[in-house]
Length: 224
Figure 1 (cartoon, rainbow, N blue to C red):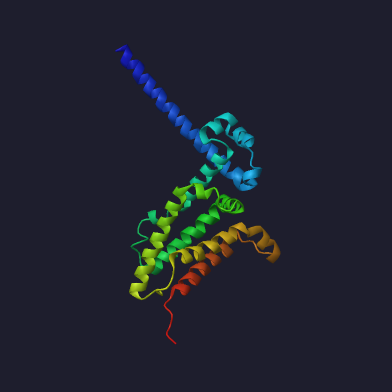
Figure 2 (cartoon, one colour; figure 1 turned 90 degrees about the horizontal axis):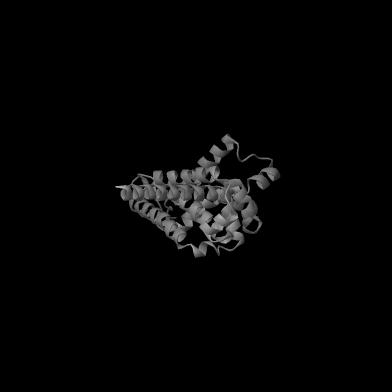
């Protein structure tokens, strides 16, 4: 009886330790996301992350195998959160034009609400995508988005509402570019043109404009 109690207690303690470890990792990733997005890979300090998460630099290195390992974990988490378009119920089955509208709005809103993600994309581009190249899971997740867009484009072309010569990767680039630019260049663009891109009225106008522009591009071409 005593032996069984000891085993049960040990099992409970082990579970609590595992839960604490996962919570600690989640806290570290949240703070590290801000640190890397703000200061870049070279400028980010593991000491600062440790201090803000009330953990030790040694523990961070234990969990993530070093600063670059932590940075790659941050990238993987950031991309896993945005690359979930195919999980939005009903998009693939919706009317093609409605599906594209929803994808644009989801992408637009996500980038607006997650400026750290946009900053991380810029940081990784400084490093020429070398860290992402070491994370095949990111490429796999993004492939699902292209699959969804391909399916929608094919249905739209078959129904005669979309042109039949649009590449899904090109469309993804078109959708993403404007959404990311508004966030990544918000301060320089705003200063040069005296425009507050975070203003709600401007934001809503731009979202509507982007939807209309992309859908107009997808319209079948008239024969001359």
